[in-house]
Image (cartoon, rainbow, N blue to C red):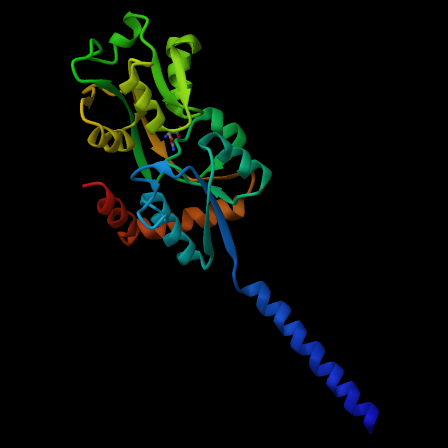
Length: 248
Ligand code: GLN
């Protein structure tokens, strides 16, 4: 009799702990997003030190749609692809342009936004169009590892391109006179020009691009999930509503 009771107790405890293990696996599925949160309005810190912006909100909507929790990890822009390759983060979302070079290292979802590389100069600068960049020995500021960096290095040579950790540092270098212009994505460029009097964006743009989310090469399951979510959130107007909230 006593033995039966003990056996029942052991079985009860065992099944309870099995349930905890099972429940634990179901709950708290987390997707880790790698980003660089100095790229307003796509990702930046708000007054409460929270990472907000178009990418942060679209990622939150995607995770809600797929039943995941979202964790955003801030890092240097040129570490994002490595973190995806190594598997320390699940996806990269950082106003990231789809490019043939990056497609060797990661896979990209369908595009959820377009970007334009523009040129920021000081008002009254002798640089009045993108063509002027080929004419003289102008120094060009860029953000390290971005498409602006890659294209400008190809077009004008590494000697004339100075890379900074973020767009803000590049703009400070322009104001201080270490570079003659800065090549940057249009929306962050607009924010930086608004915040720093005496600067302007040239009317001619440098390159047009598509932004997408990157995942580890060959992770077709996550890629399909993300594409399915992006498709549904585009169709129901969620993506447009988020973009319109940040870009007037
Ligand atoms: N769109 C650019 C790129 O992908 C810049 C992105 C960024 O600085 N966050 O390289």
